Image 1 (cartoon, rainbow, N blue to C red):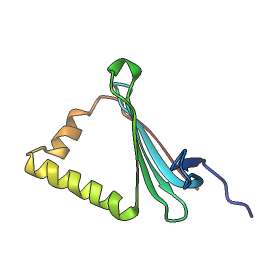
Image 2 (cartoon, rainbow, N blue to C red):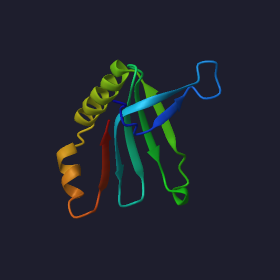
Image 3 (cartoon, rainbow, N blue to C red):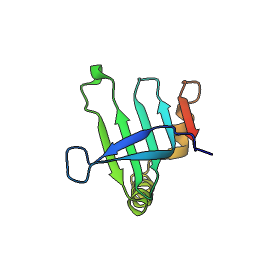
Image 4 (tube, rainbow, N blue to C red):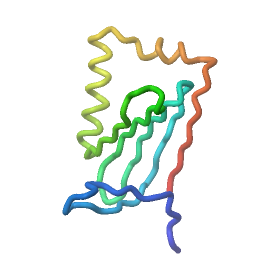
Length: 109
């Protein structure tokens, strides 16, 4: 029985290491300011893609980063440690979003 595909991502585009890799699962969140933030878990132990897509009107560029599993965990851990040292209360910041619509889409193969 063939597995259902939820999509592929091209990694290392334009290089001799360019390849298309199946997405195992992903989550994409759309915030009230029209920012999209996605995390894709890739097949073949290829790691994760983190993507931030800003509205054109913001003047900020869109960014993508391809991380190994270890780097993904390190990135998340560093963000948590930073928030702790910078006295950013993640729970309080999340509470401020109550009542503001954050849409998300999750898919898994």
